[in-house]
Length: 261
Ligand code: G3P
Ligand code: MG
Image 1 (tube, rainbow, N blue to C red):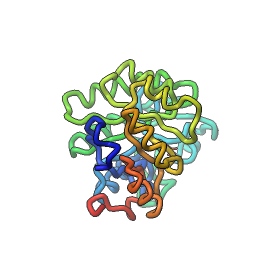
Image 2: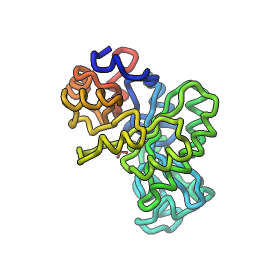
Image 3: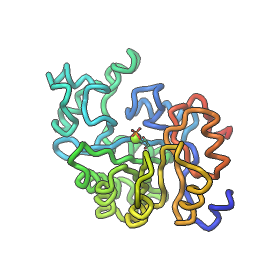
Image 4: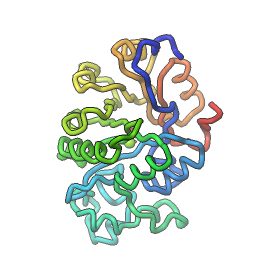
């Protein structure tokens, strides 16, 4: 264990986290992707969660449906249509795999509940990035918090929430104060560590290039863990390990083998 982590609370999560299930090797945020990530030896996954029009948390990265579903064709929806424009009964009929490859055609969008059941049944860990449709930050945090509290009730290890949006973390803190939270940071901004502490965050998840020895020591000194996204090169991963950081989110499930590292 790195010297700077010895006084931190225990950290139950593995170091290696598969981004969106299996990076780019399968359609992101589908169950097919999480199964593929698990096949490569991953025991923790990152996913992106947002709300349908009727408040069902489901998995999708983008606000709009166009890149990763057939929403435009199937619904005659404009390219600007978002997941929150449609109820889950409609979203659940979309094809979220054909854009990636023929072998994944017909793969549905999963609900957060679908993925929770898969992870709990298999003993996998989950990092739920709360990725609100713009304007729905607080309510998305609240609802994802409610769902996760119910789904993981009685489980030994809870999911880790993360978000770039302070309002989303505040919402999750209101409905699921016992589920750990992390602040996502793409570029350092004034007061970001203070905000993370005010929201009771247990970790900072940074664009990996931001970490250096001083920042790692500062964040560890504040009692928070140090995680990185999205790390797809050997040299970058080695630098983060040498710095004593605590978690690495990667697309390259085919390059980094958690069992061997
Ligand atoms: O949660 C880490 C990472 O996924 C944040 O960026 O855009 O890939 O969701 P993004
Ligand atoms: Mg994400």
